[in-house]
Length: 549
Figure 1 (spheres, helix red, strand yellow):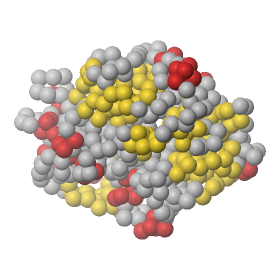
Figure 2 (cartoon, one colour):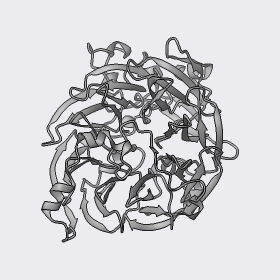
Figure 3 (cartoon, rainbow, N blue to C red):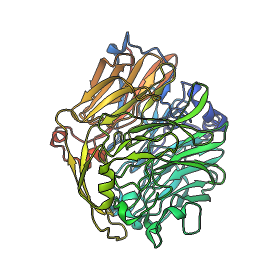
């Protein structure tokens, strides 16, 4: 339902021309700094920009240009889409179009869902943004719908229900448009769902395919599950947006944790949980898979972003996994190239066997599966949580917000009730002395850390790097920050007034470079950590845009 009228100056004729971007434009997104058309600033999700007007020499002068209030107190993780002088952002309850020059609202469409829906959203009432194609925006809703919205008017074009949310299913994901298909992944891994990824027709919302991440008996991979009905509630959500290689015509999508966390109750590798899948975008057929964490008891989601790059002439895919290892995988065939720790404390495995691709488990893992109490690192928060990293192709470094937290864990008998947490474990945090996270510059091939910037309260925002030799990210205490990409020195900081857990982007208009980020406290750490220090950081989301004077 539209809640605010359009600017009267916008004519339908102008809208038809201005929104004529195509699939080819999406493929060229990383090469067109005046646009941000794809989640992650390009199909490869490098989150790197060739813009260098804002640099290490002048970033200290960066200043706000405009700010827009989202009128919402939930956590804000939306990725801004920018096209033809307009910016599109989302909250859990609205889709918004802003004038790029002034930040003024052009239209706002509300997203209504039943009041009881948030009870099946595990880790924050959030939405991560829209996809755009040929004048239409695509987004998901907390009550498990996919909707299409006219980018010129904010009017809803179609709405398709994916599944009944009351069974524990939800959507927070930004859709991915690949080979003419709108692709989404379901949330709900902590509710005993059977996870899936699915594709929709952008013209009418017809579901074209659904690929379950938990195979039914007789399907490929089902032999990795025990006999019985564990597969029916086996988890495997796909709640973060995948990547796309148009040349190979493959979509890469991360799959989350197995359910319940009691791994002893579901012996076997439990495919395709804790995995990366290579999918045919037209059919959803799995072309290959790589499993990061077989028979996982620790909530080590494999959903983190899968970054595409070329290293030493090889087409690779990278993921900084929740389990503490940074994986480099040949994206043509799923072969493991490298796997190194990117955080200091990894106690559940001694390493990853490069010949088999499997983790080398420690006694801690064995005891956990056997039902004994253990303390393991990193915690269920992960060595990295959802917050996306950036890859700088010139330096070959990834810049990643890491966490330094352990967990006390003991498996218990899982009890399934639809729409209720299905943990199968008792747990509490094992807090370290000192800081709880770091922004790190890491060599993905070796795991060597070039520099780090600690944070007492871990950063949970996305990371952006630029050709101006800068790394941008945000703090849960409200600061939006810029660091020197070579040295890690903090060069600039601005207090936005609420925690930054959003995703920064940079763009160009009329020859001038801008940087935009959403602030708004919330998300998984704020919900589950009990960190009393965050009480001093108020909620309330805004869109902030900065430039040089």
